[in-house]
Structure formats: structure tokens, C-alpha cells
Image (tube, rainbow, N blue to C red; front, side, top):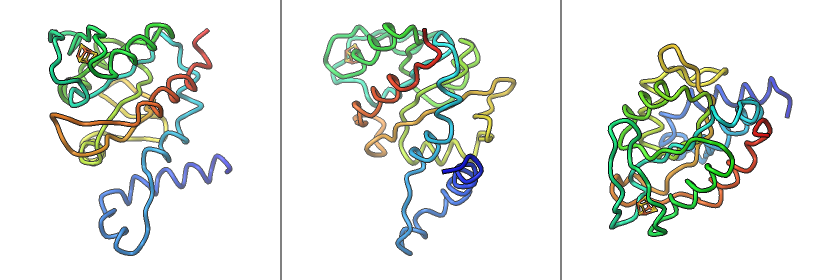
Amino acid sequence: MTRDCSRLKFIAAFFFFSWRAFLERLGIRYDIAEIANAYYREAFARIPAADKAVILPHCLIGNPCKARFSKEDGVLCLRCKNCRCGEISLLCEARGWQFYISPSSGFTKRLVQRKGIRAAVGGACAFEIEKGIRSTPITIQGVRLKKNKVIPQVVLAARYDCLENDIDWEGLKGIILAGQAADR
Ligand code: SF4
């Protein structure tokens, strides 16, 4: 696919996302995360490792979870193996990436600015993605957060459930391993 074609597909996917229920009734389905990830992939890989982060939503943490919460850094994962967040935290450390578990989208936006994050892999449900599209400028150069521009990669959460959720963990690991062109 040419760059122009990929850009057009990307713009159309975001423009029509809030109409997806109507489109599905017409038999038109598409995966917005897959389209956005493909579009941003090369730009994401070019960002240096130290400026990259995985930011997971707190709905993915295990139950029980003994991690403390820090106002500065979110949920401080102990890598206890009661959920797969610990494994992702370890993988990020090995790659020199930052890793956070965030309690809310507002916290995530402030975190990105405080930590100087330029590229982020996030997990989000369709509801949060739609909310993000309405409230945050998503451009062909990245997601704009005040003065910062962040290149995203997204893994869609299994459902809209703020307490117990799931994502494609292998897919998430694949994105981390693929996004390391500038890591060395
Ligand atoms: S691995 Fe981390 S986030 Fe998951 S339950 Fe353990 S301390 Fe909590």
C-alpha cells in the first residue's frame, strides 16, 4: 500500500469511527487499532528507546494486586506474576523503555507530558478510543497533547470493563519487539 493510500485509510477510519454501529449494520467492519498502528509504525520505531513507553490501563491488573499507587508514576507494579503486566514491565526494562500503569486517561495525558514520552503503546477499549477521538486532536503526525506530540500504537482491550479486562498480550509484546528500530 502506498503512503498516500495508507494516510487516506487512516483518516477515513477515524472520521467514521463514531458511526461504526451504523456501518456494522451495513456489513462494514474495520479494526481502527490495526489501521492506526500500521500508519504510525515507522515513525514509532524511529523514536529513541528512552522516549518510548508502554502505558497500560489499570483494568488489566490482577486481582488481588499488592502494588502501591504513586501520584507521580501510577500503579507501581511489583512483577508478582498475578497478571501479565509484570512481564510487560520486565520486557520494557530490557528494551530501555518506560513502563506505567495508569488509573485514567487524564492521568495518562499528564504522565506523557511529565515524562517527556514521544511514543507510547497503550491499551484501550473501544469506548475509551471514541472518547479520545472526541477530546484529543489526532493528526497524521501523532496525537497532540498540549505542546507534545506522541506517536501511538494501540492494543484494543477485550471489553468495556474498568475492573477486570484483558488484551491480546502476545500482540502487545509483538508491538514492543517490532518497535525497537531506534533502541540500540
Ligand atoms: S504483576 Fe504487577 S500489576 Fe499485576 S498483580 Fe502483580 S503487582 Fe499487580
